[in-house]
Amino acid sequence: MAAADDLDRLVADAFRRPSWRVHHPRRSDGPQPDLIVEGGGRKYIIEIKRSSEGRSDRVIPLLSQAILEAQAFARQFPETVVPVAVVGAERFPPAVVDSVQRYADRVAPRMVVGLVDAAGLRAFWGHGLEILNARPSSKENRARRQIAGQPLPQLFSDLNQWMLKILLAQSIPEDLLSAPRSRYRNPTELARAAGVSVMSAVRLVRRLENEGFVDPDQEVLALARIPELLGRWSARRESAREFPVRWLVKRDRSAFAGLLKSYSACIPSAGHPQAGRRRQPRACLGLFAAADALGFGFVHGVPPYIYMERFEPLVLKKWGLSIEGAGHGPDAFIRIAANPEAVFRAAVVKDGVPCADILQVWLDVSEHPARGRAQADEIARRALGPLLRNK
Image (cartoon, rainbow, N blue to C red; front, top):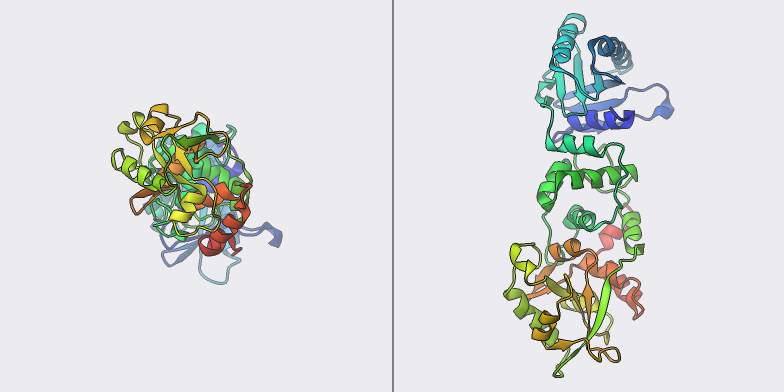
């Protein structure tokens, strides 16, 4: 087991069930149990010990100590509580699990004894907590083992931004951000909803926990300190490439919406990657034009921005656009998304026109020289207020 914090997290995760509450007592109040869990009409007082090896001669002495300490902590509570002694290690062989169970049945038949390891094993005995038991080698625990000790990726990578949008989606209307809307108890459920690997979700959740943006005591993955998180996200400048373009045959700016409407009808959905988009890149309105289409327009006179997954001269030619001679007085800007999955998976369709989601627009316009701050403030006031207010 890499560290005590990782062990505490694995044990806490084992007890996360609907309507159950997991608490980490404050150490400042003197000696405290490692965890307190309330669920199923009972309160559990949990003491956890870490073993450097999964051998019986190492585990059983630590288990004995955990049993005594859990019983001592339980006596401090005025109400009836259940003491729980848990030992964790990198891996417990089956023979050691059997040995510990026999020992627990002999010396502590009235309390709960458990083993948790980094391979995914959960083995509890007593008071019906066998419902928490799990076999080792689940995808999520394999991913946790693989990334243990490795440097975590940056918080705002492309897929991380997409998963953050999913975690924020319940606070944003569906017609302003396209994403699954549910409550996710662990990284595995988040990965399934996002269509990413379990390892990617584990890395994000671990990074969020390390930086205090996810409360590990919650039953579900719930973001904390959201205004600070969004502030850091907004301050991070994306290295998106932009190309000015002009009409080959002069047209009105409103023609861009119809152009994207026709284009999106002929290719796979802007929000879901498919094999067909290898031939035709995803595209959508961005920045001020998207704000306008979504009903939050505030700044006018800025040439439209069109997000494209990659630069495709043939597509521009079909659209009747050219980069030649567009440096002065461009009709529009083509913006190559630095975070294409976060942009296009969350894109919404408004009156048939694909548009970047409202959170993406807020992020993109915040530092734009053409009154971008004013546009961002309008979006914050009308669409993102609940997220940007400290709770």
